[in-house]
Amino acid sequence: MSVVATNAEPVSRFYTSQGLKLHYNDWGNERAPLLLLVHGMRDHARCWDWVALALRDRWHVVAPDLRGHGDSQWSPDGAYINPYHAFDVTELIDLLGHDQVTIVGHSFGGNVCARYAAIYPERVRRLVLVDALGPSDDKMSGWATEPVTRTRDWIEKRRGVMARAARRFPDLEEAVARMGDANPHLTAQQARHLAIHGVRRFDDGYGWKYDPQLSIFMPEDFLLDGKMFWREITAPTLLCWGPESWTINPETSGRAAAFRQHRTQVFEGAGHWLHHDRLDDFLSTLNEFL
Image (cartoon, rainbow, N blue to C red; front, top):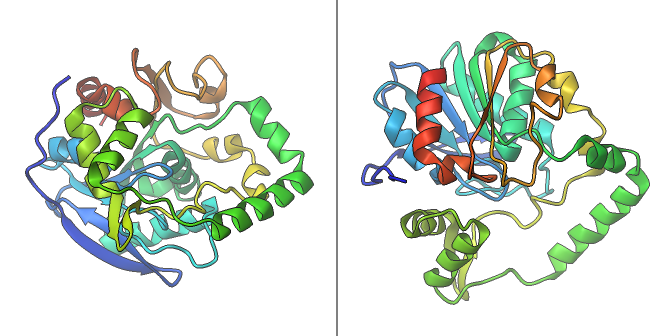
């Protein structure tokens, strides 16, 4: 796999949404159509650098750090449920001043963007969801029907996170190694790039930029059926999936049928981060679809 060189840098910008100072990377070319690249859970905007570099000549590429991620402010109340993220994305798109937007969203970020596309269907030209439809229906329904247990778990997990000392690495190399362990498909260059932009230097070592409370989902997150949103999306939608992912194939599972206009692309030999695992194939598919 070839990896696009990352010698060019985006402009770092900030905006305010719901009282939080949120960050995004702007790759310029403001007169071109807007392309929003939205990362997944515990990730950051610089994970899209290789994609942004390949597309910035034809698009106004913007990659935000979702609240609690990257260089965006953490929510003091741990407000990381989908509606808050969708609100932030809405504010950013309006700030950028484009009537319409094309969106590529990975994992949890894709879930957020699918909700935006359902709420404001007239604003979205095309939508690309990269392994973004979540766990199986059986698992989701189990979570949704156990609100009391899930609420208790949410309270106890949050209390545990707040009581524990933040994880620190003695040096950057350990963070690079952890990144490689999380996804064995990464090249050494990819792992280093993601780690460099994913950690912050503290007095007692290096630590991840994301808020530890991010992945503690509130029970209410699982009470809504995603298909109710997907059915309202009018934009042509590309569903990307890798067989080595922990998620299920959107086509064979029947989920893809909820989208009015869709195409499913399977990336053999790829997992959850298929835009890293099969970058060249992903870019080729993305260019053809867009």
